[in-house]
Amino acid sequence: MVTDALLNNQNDEIKTQDNSGYPMQRFSVAPMLDWTDRHCRYFHRLLSDNALLYTEMVTTGAIIHGKGDFLTFNEEENPVALQLGGSNPVDLAHCAKLAQERGYDEINLNVGCPSDRVQNGRFGACLMGEADLVALCVSSMREVVDIPVTVKTRIGIDEQDSYQFLVDFIGTVNEKSGCDNFTVHARKAWLKGLSPKENREIPPLDYPRVYQLKRDFPNIIMAINGGIKTFDEMEEHLKHMDGVMVGREAYQNPYLMAEVDQRLFGSSKPIIKRREAAEAMFPYIERQLANGSKLGHITRHMLGLFQGIPGGRQWRRYISENAHKPGSGIEVVQRALEKISNDLDV
Ligand SMILES: Cc1cc2nc3c(=O)[nH]c(=O)nc-3n(C[C@H](O)[C@H](O)[C@H](O)COP(=O)(O)O)c2cc1C
Image (cartoon, rainbow, N blue to C red):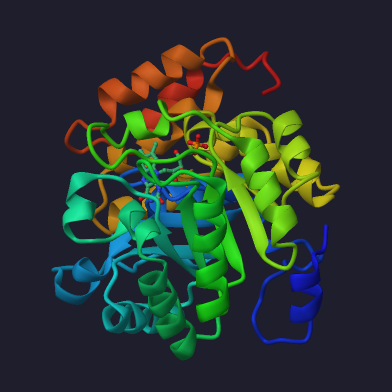
């Protein structure tokens, strides 16, 4: 699917398509705090060449004032998008510039997180009520980088949940900042009373509303997010949208991603086996352990790899019980793999 927006961009420097002409957003793994860290993204990249991978949200405060490097990633992860949390245009521009220099492929502004901490910092989902400020944030970033600056948002907040409110938000940000790339989580957020987890489950999903939004803004590249689990569902969404963003299912059942290139990007390469994917992590794990990483911090992202396969529970249990022990190394994963019978071609 190539939208007008993409055609218009064809001669620009900005990369909005992958090498086969698909929008980079055609399939992406959602930004997930504490989950989509660099180890997780390295693992996901082994499963799919084309998936666009988002970082966890990183606040401008952490990048500017924090101790440590919040922008580290492995070069194998590309294409990778940095999600920023913040609402100070100067700080956002500064961080966006740093991120481009470091090699990120996209900057995404978080306008969807409802946590109290984020609201106190006046960013995340509450920014849906401040379209002018979002536009200023985005245009400040666009002025200093060449890579796409995108926005991830919801369909509304609190009582501000009419279709017109959503149209006004997208329309204002698009017009005032030039931002032509949005991912929409197809449910609203309640800013008071619900935890972030409840805000991913309780407000109902409204896919038709997001399809309508795409119809009303045909020139904006738009991906849909929320509750997507299967390829059939993704293919249905892609009849209406430029892209699908998958969060929890991609994390909890990562093998889903092994078919993304074939099912959604027309690749004819063989589908990697689960066992191959696990083994392909060995050199990475060894390198990371040598650099001081802890085994459990890497293997926790691999626990769901054998979901639904005989021995899959034992794999998960063995790693969970052993990976955090001091000094544990690659042999823990090798032993865990032995729980999956060699007779199984998986
Ligand atoms: C553990 C966890 C952490 C999350 N952290 C972020 C975040 O940092 N930034 C963000 O925009 N959304 C975050 N989300 C929301 C997801 O990006 C996504 O919008 C949501 O989970 C709905 O998609 P899904 O139903 O496919 O999981 C998080 C979700 C989970 C489960």
